[in-house]
Length: 308
Image 1 (cartoon, rainbow, N blue to C red):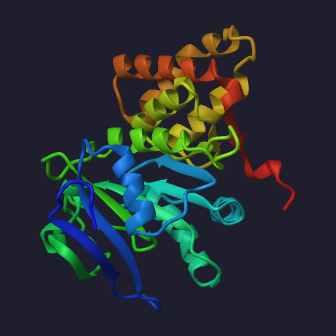
Image 2: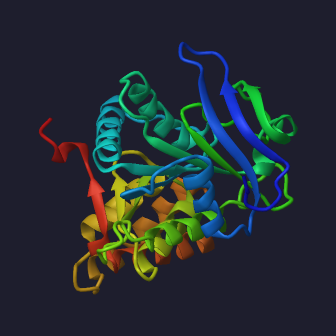
């Protein structure tokens, strides 16, 4: 068996507690590991079939609550998409914020017996609480998903089946995983769905809540070549709600006169939402505005649109 770079930490995590103890495969890897090696790990070591769709979830890292109705609809939609298409779901992997919300959606699926959704958490090695316990070759590690309240570290979410723990030598902060995740998404999007066709694997970004980094991520997705379509969950809070609001008033032809006329109001809202100064709010306003120039790539999901 070959693993991408001689890693000193890989194996199986056994999540403790809860009615259904669950297991997950994990590997620690360097932040500059080549995506083709990671895909080989997925298909050869972890015996995964290539996805027919990749759903990459972006949103806030801090904990937040979703309205029960929105949570229910989101859960249904996410599971339906993942089940019917043979999708992979990428998240940040830790038991906080948006990843926790996605984990809750996957919890329901766990009890429904049919094939597990392939949920892959991509987290920085340096943020994982007690990561020294994961060091070793082909380990079986008992793991508790309970974090200490004021710790700058995070625990892994126990609804994920696979974890890539990305190491760039830093501890206690995020960031190591961002470039690796994006490169991997891009590499997967270039994989042919079938040897005889020209169709490659579709990637879609799902935005739930989110901070300033989420806005930047959306801008990168919609302006990339090829671009990645984005689904924004309106009503989930912060970045998602701002994107949804601006999308609503954005014109198709690129002349954003309505949004320009609301500039002062929007900048005040941005300042309040993200607790930033005027200068940073101006930058975020520009980034949001640039997103609206790609209005056709952004779909806003609202509960009220649905009759269910």
